[in-house]
Image 1 (cartoon, rainbow, N blue to C red):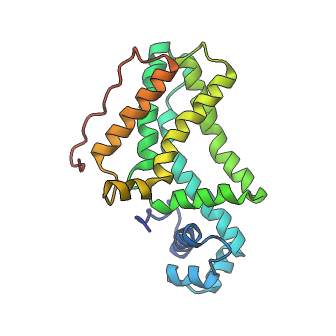
Image 2: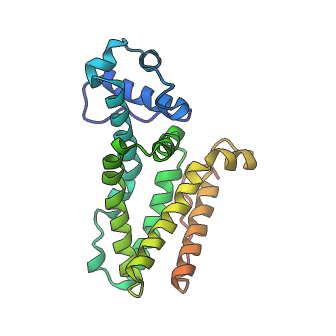
Length: 232
């Protein structure tokens, strides 16, 4: 099922944490309807009554799991954008910031340190079209999209609002593809995990495609430096 993430920070309740992580893996693998409270408790090594005690219902546990996963998946982008104020950047600075953001985004979504069940769970959420999940998805994704659009505008002032929105979707879509399609890609490559060499290739490719489409290809793509200790 992929690597288990670290337990939730700033919480003294180990049982609650284990329930969220166990439920997340099961919801991602089997779906909400086919996952029982008993299955969750067994996997978490907890009493069945613990689910109701901590969350009052399986539905509330599901919502907490989705919030947790989205928070983990968007944390790196928020960190990457934290010190960037697009309106204060020159156009060359915005181009470089966009290059850095693409690199960090890919490593956030595609790194082998990210449990594979994250992507499966979010894909199930998207396909379910549940109105209950709409506010959570909105809260997680809208600020990220707005930040990316602002950076795109600073890098490419000639873009219309509609073009900026579509480019933001395009960049995100390219990155998310390598997460959602991880299993068939690894199968075809006969690999168990994405290697550092492959990640560098993905970063360079998506940056090149994006910059070429935006007319920024006069700014050469800089391949990320090889990180010490990483498999290549």
